[in-house]
Structures are given as structure tokens and as C-alpha cells.
Amino acid sequence: MVRTEYSDGPYWERVLRYSHAGGLQAVMDEYTHLLRESLAVSSMEPGPMAARISEEVTSAMMIRTASLRIDNVTAPPYAREAKLEPEPMRIRYAMRFGDDRADEETTIEDGSTQTTRKERVRSAFNSPFWPFVLVSTSIGQEGLDFHYYCHAVTHWNLPSNPVDLEQREGRIHRYKGHAIRKNVAASFASTALQDSDPDAWNAVFEHAKQARRPGENDLIPYWLFQGDAKIERHVPALPLSRDLDRLSDLRRSLAIYRMVFGQSRQEDLIDFLLLNIPEGARDALSSELQIDLRPPISPVVRVNDPRPLDAPGTDCPDPTSVMADEAPEHTPIFGESI
Image (cartoon, rainbow, N blue to C red):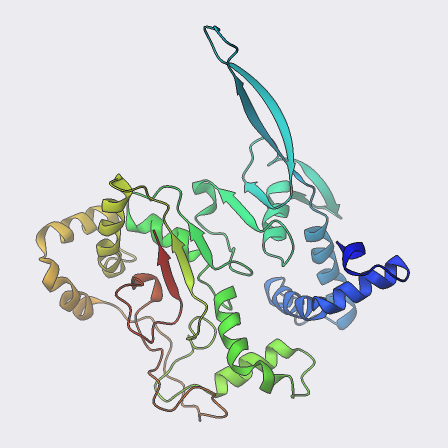
């Protein structure tokens, strides 16, 4: 690709020109900003901090290609049975998370710390480099973060309860997620680049924070921020399939689930409420019984906010509870396709 785009000059020079044209410096600025927080190295001296971040970047970029085995099905004429011939394939674009054959493989050793391939695949997916698609079973739906460079989840099959659905989509709806950064940068990048802060992303979020409207809390701009980028839910359900009805049921159950969050035997309580509370009364009951865990409102002065004065605020329900066809205009980060 480099030789195709730039045909003259030494190869190393063509690589530099290609990287400059593609904005590699800006990519690395964003990536190292995220690593500084996720690795908890902000309090370190510059030398050790740079060394630790460099190790993580190197580990993510040196992930080996994945091996995928496919079955070549052949059926010779007049044969009584089909023949399956396994054929290996090497892939880079997508990887699976939680391969039993490779989970315990320890190929990187840093002092006394060993990293399994599963952990390295997660680190690589949380980077701006390949793999760009991560395929996972339910093992990846709890306790893991995939939000750094991902804002779309495709449900190959839908879970049976709203608890698991919330867990799945919560992997990419997190602090300074990909959709959030895209929206914040679209509003404040040009202003932040004029600041003297060497970390442009610190400046971007600081401008977004200073531009909060009265009544907005500390979820903004780190967890919620309106813009074109949205958390996307994709459900490739076939027409007349069970998943269409299940998706409709899960939509209704999500609001009920948030009412019983933190209670014991949540699924039984959800079933009871769905069975005994009319659909028209659920919203009022939810508003009456819910516990508001939002941070307190921050009294800030609006400064250099590019959004119009009469634009609606972002103080709205959790976007993962609002569907694309039901959402008000100010819903910041949710979209859906079926």
C-alpha cells in the first residue's frame, strides 16, 4: 500500500509520508491519553510513564495473526456421505475472544507478570490498530471494557433477560468511550488545539466540562455528550424470528430492570412486576421508586459552547434505555438496527 501511494524516495521516507498523511500522530496522541488513565500511570515520573505506555503499545501492535479453521464440504457424485476437510486460514481483521486452546498461552513475560493471549487480544482490540472486530461468547459480557475504540455491539442472538443485555452493551458504554470522544472532539477540537496543554485530549474535555449548562452534572461530558456518534445496537434477526419478539420484550424489561437494580433475585422480581403492573403504569412507578445515582449538579459557567443556546440539554434517561424510534432529539448516544 505504501509503495502504491508513494513511488519515489527511500522506503523509510515513504512510510513517514504515509503516516503523516494518515494522521498517525493524532492517532497516537489519543491512544496514549487513554493509556495514561487506564494504566494508572499519571502520577509516575515522565520516564517510567513513557516506558510503561510504550510496553502496552508494543504489546498491542505485536499480536500475532489469528488462525481460523473452516470445513470444506465436498460431496463427490453418487457418494453416500459428504466429506469434511478442515482448512486453516490466517486472519488479521477479526479475532475471537476466549479461545480455549490459546487462553493459557503465555508468550509475553514482564518480570513476574505473564500475559495470556486472551488478555493481549483484548489490549489489541482496545487500540486503534487491528483487530477491528472482536467475536466473543458470553465470557466477554461481564467485567471487561471494550469501549476505547468501539461503539457498536452486534447481538448474534439476544439474551433471555435484560440483565445480560445491559451487561453486554455496558462493555462499550463507559467513561470516555469512543462515541463520547467523537462527539466531544467534533464540538471542541479546534478550540482545544489553540491551548498550550501538551495533551490535546485533556484540553478537549476541559473545554467540554466548562461548557456544561446549568443543571447538567458530572456525567457530562465523560459519560454523555450529544452528537452524531451513538452507541449502536445491531440485531441481525430474520423476519418472523423469535428474536424480534424477544427484542420487543427486552425493551420493555429494561426500564423495569433499572427499578430492581441491586435487589436480590432480580429476574424473579422483574417477572413479577411485568406480570402485575399494567404497561401504562410502569413509567410513573419507575419514576416514583427509582434511586437517582447521578452525581450532584455542578455549578459551572457556560464558556465557548458551540451548541446553540436553545438546544435541549443532555439530562435524559440512560441512552441504552431509549430506542432509536422512540428517542427524543436530545438523546446523545444510542442507535439501533435490526
